[in-house]
Amino acid sequence: MIIRQFIQKVCFTSSFTVRTSSLTTSKSGLMAFALLALASIGSASVALPALAQADTPSTLAISDSDLDLYRTHVSTLASDKFEGRGPLSAGETLTVNYLVEAYKALGLKPAFGDSYTQPVPLAKITPSSDMALTLGQHTFAGGSAFTARTQRIVKDITLKNSDVIFVGYGINAPEYNWNDYAGLDVKGKTVVMLVNDPGFASKDPDLFQGNAMTYYGRWTYKYEEAARQGAEAVFIVHETMPAGYGWGVVENSNSNTKFTLVDNNKNLSQVGVMGWLHLNTARTVFEQAGLDYAALKEQASTPGFKPIPMKVKASLTFSNTITHAQSLNVAAILPGASAADEWVMLHAHWDHLGKSEKNGKTVIYNGAVDNASGVAGVLTLANNLVAQSEQTPFERTLMFSAFTAEETGLLGADHFAKNPPIPTANMVAFLNIDGMNVNNAVDYILQYGEGYSSLEDDLSATAAAQGRSVKLDPRPQNGLFFRSDHFALARQGVPSLLFMSLGDTDPNFIANRYHKADDDYLPSWTLGGVQQDLALIGTMMSNLANGQQWPVWKRDSDFKKKRLIDRPEAPAAGLVETAAETAESEAPKQ
Image (cartoon, rainbow, N blue to C red; front, side, top):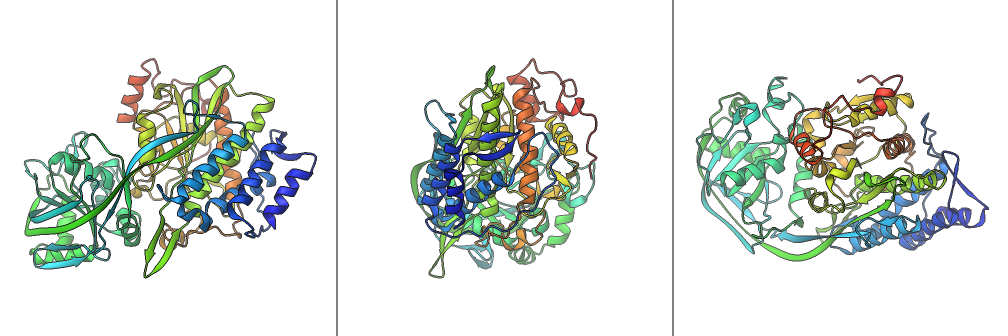
């Protein structure tokens, strides 16, 4: 009944007011949203509890009507009808159509020439489920003891009597004077390595970045570096604390269908086997080889560590079912009045894990928090900012986007970043929502990464205007800055900021719902956190769209080097006037 009441409210009242700088939202646009939601979920009943009133003393306000709209979007996108929004599925078709129609209803223009969508060529690879890994005298079952997959476009993968070498963290980082492969030939061999990086293990603030994970700690880097070294197979030893998630996440994310972009060489330059070992599996193999896993793990975090041949052989065979298809990125723009070629971007990935068959039953991974909540946030802010622009147009162009295949390695974002609709030099900033706080409001905003860009200063100033502080990532060892779509844009030099609240206000989320079938929409969500965070993000978008400042990278990094190539006229960090520099106060960091 809520959806029907929502439609009636939109259609039969003389004006449907959304408190966005005291503007009135287009009735026809909201009606299209409501009809779209009704068509998507039929007669499903969604109970709407009393909403928590977040204290958001910001230049942009998010009203209860905005939250009604938000709730409609998130409950629709996370419904079983959308089948977990898996790329290259019926769920993708429903999701993309929903987004395109929502953008059209708001009067937004296509971001890709005359199209709201950007084709992303993907290979859909499903490994055989009955694989077994032999390491020395032991044979292990896939799923519970290890996972293995490939991104090579080949029908069969065969690893036969491959020498196994423990390479510590599998890192080659000249700037840290660290090379786990020094003097080692791993061509055609199997390498076993630890997750994260030596800074986390040692807790030494002078080693890498101490407890905060660097990109060298990410599994994506480890596979990339092993391929550069010529290894045939990689197995990363899973431990929950340094990985940031339990074995169930590894198993669910790597045992089913995965997607990959395809290069001109059918990805043959990539490592052949991309694997993980359960900690118990690793301990068994190390013990068999006469090695002390705990002792070697400690040694691996000290400078000068030398790789250890494990004197066991690895054998593994599995087949792949491969199909080729195009998935779709979706994006729309609100053209700027005077600087239309300068884009300020707001984003949330639309995909989740889809569905799978387990024990004869269909399991749907609806991904309500991850990331229907983020997509709903983008759509709600798009509605709000369009209404604002009807009174006073923005100087710069606003882009609202949702990319595909984030869950399988930021593939849609990577394709967009390398095939952008405008030069990356013209991209002012990329704000990315990946999991919103759907619970009560809090007196802080989380910041991922520290000292990266001047956008952190803007975040601090905007939070202060709401009476909130900035709280640094409480789990820096998990490397969340490197694990969402904005990272693909950052690698191309675009200043980027992540907004994420996965498990922050729900301590049970990561253990019980993250990447599991229980990540469902709950009518009991208060949305207090959504209200205050959308107000903050919307304010940042408005300030960037009406300002002349160009956010800059602060810390020396590949991001900064790429930006200086794109925009050599850009001043050094600290010389750009930002909202933070003109604010009367800054929020303290916790």
